[in-house]
Amino acid sequence: MIKMKSLKNLKYKTPVFKKDQPDDTYKFKPLPAPSGKYPYHLVLKDIVPQVSDQHMAFHMIGDTGGVGNPALQQLIANTMASQCNKESKPDDGPQFLYHLGDVVYHYGEAEQYDNQFFQSFGNYPGPIFAIAGNHDSDINPLSTHSYKSLDAFTKVFCDTTSRPVAFSNQTKRKSMVQPNIYWTMKTPLATIIGLYSNVPKFGVITEEQKNWFIAELRSANPDKMLIVCIHHAPYSADINHGSSLPMIAFLEEAFETTGKKPDIVFSGHVHNYQRFCKNYTDGKSISFVIAGAGGFDELHPVASTDDVRFTADIPQLDDVKLMNYYDTGHGFLQIGINKEEDSISLNGNYFSINPNEGITLVDSFTISKSIRQKNIEAYA
Image 1 (cartoon, one colour):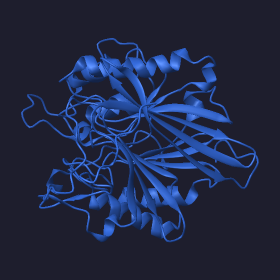
Image 2 (cartoon, rainbow, N blue to C red):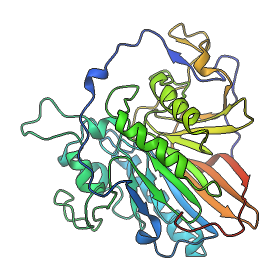
Image 3 (cartoon, one colour):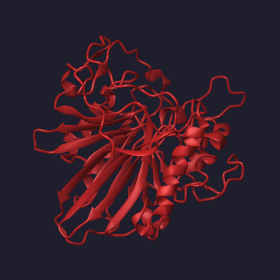
Image 4 (cartoon, helix red, strand yellow):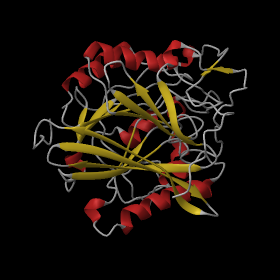
């Protein structure tokens, strides 16, 4: 494992807010109709019957789209596939990929999916689930044909039955059956809530989705890992986006309303890797992890403290610390969840990919909690 890049004095050790940002909420796009029934649950064992009640592993990655360096995208996808295939015990290896959004760039056109998704991930052996990013959701104003926001995304990921995708150039990967643009994956060891934050730079959440999210938090089994995934990163120290105050406000309101907080929040949108820890007054700590360096060729460095475009001096960023980051290369996460007799733990490993140096482990973290039941319910 290489030594992580040190958090030098010139680099922020906290999330930042980018000053003088224009309001682009006018870019909001209406949501497509759900493909499944409320409350939009997908049971993992219906897709991966062999998933264990004691251990599960999967990949996470965001912002894989773009055509600036297709060889890099293919390398990342092939490396993840090799991790699935080379494990000595198949049940111990990653069994699926959870995509954190921006599958294609710069607009969510169907014709972009073949070379940006199906070709790159054609050899990935497991199912691929996804939440939509802002680029997946946007509409090309210069398109020669009319289409609605997320038309292509829903055909690939939110189908009513798994089938070949017409614009996949006859690759073997079929459509996924997620019940909605925002949805919850029910697994034996974790509840994974996937949110949809729309097109604007800092995200927009509808009132209907907010009410759904509050209900999902309230009903989540406390003896499982509670994971929230949202494309727009609430906290970031990068120079392109910075933190999203709308997403912070949305999450904190839901946490306050329900009295429940997730164990970890994963995001993309920012093209690097960052891991934050937020400490709450009730003693709870939440990790916020960005894994958005999945293949798009432009990376986003962490801001320097002397950059006058940014500030960390706002109350919304209090009690949040940047624990580690990697902003000079691309990579992906491998997540493992394990259940013991009276505890459950989530282990994360972030791997960097370099065409010349290969794969390198650059960060590891563990989240553990006690469970009240010795045998947690598989579908609760």
